[in-house]
Length: 291
Ligand SMILES: NC(=O)c1ccc[n+]([C@@H]2O[C@H](COP(=O)([O-])OP(=O)(O)OC[C@H]3O[C@@H](n4cnc5c(N)ncnc54)[C@H](OP(=O)(O)O)[C@@H]3O)[C@@H](O)[C@H]2O)c1
Image (cartoon, rainbow, N blue to C red):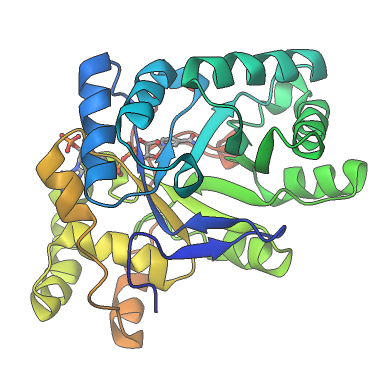
């Protein structure tokens, strides 16, 4: 049972990654970002997810340093676009580390494959060298589909340790989850609350509210717990300290098979962000510029 904010998944190289973390996408105001990270660490979060493109690595670093939590207890992720050359990936890593004010990173991800630039294999090779050099404890990708994961394996001989993708009840990604599970790739979800839109959909409420009532939780808490109970590491975002705490209050229950079967019926492919499948189909909701 995953029963605390410190409960952690084990990645392919044995590194432990907390099941639930706070993401800081779109928190560009420095004080707001520091407040969010500080509130999260104070209530027990130990995983923080940022990216070069979020433009808040400095604020995250300041909050980490002032929190008084030992560095080795915190799991810090940042990301770089897969459209970078080997040399650029190495130098951007050093820049991120400096902005964060850290001596090492816990997880470094290629944020997007950017297949049209055809650089993600060489960029991933740079991540492998950073791993070998002990500058990062684990490496992976984000928004990659099986063909791209297979290409990394074919050309570099390894699968990424993590694939961070959009996932929520409307976009459950069963095939990708099975693919990753079979290859030792930890699936990690972003936008578990559908970027905040999830509870607005009447169909979603109709399925999730009875489950929420059964456990005395909110729809949001059910969606977060569902990720963990289906074996997926989860990053959620809130800039609001009260909601940051509420979203972490999911460790005193677990969904049963009937709940998971009911939620399965919501899977209709709606998603918020562009992903690599969108080359062959439209995004159902809206698109946010990739970073
Ligand atoms: N790898 C990628 O390409 C990628 C893409 C997107 C996101 N991510 C990562 O994943 C994280 C989470 O994804 P996300 O930011 O898209 O969204 P999310 O966690 O699905 O939803 C965040 C939204 O929900 C609201 N919210 C949060 N908790 C709530 C609650 N209990 N009740 C009501 N509203 C609530 C937040 O508003 P308030 O802030 O006002 O509470 C915010 O507007 C990001 O911060 C980022 O770290 C990665």
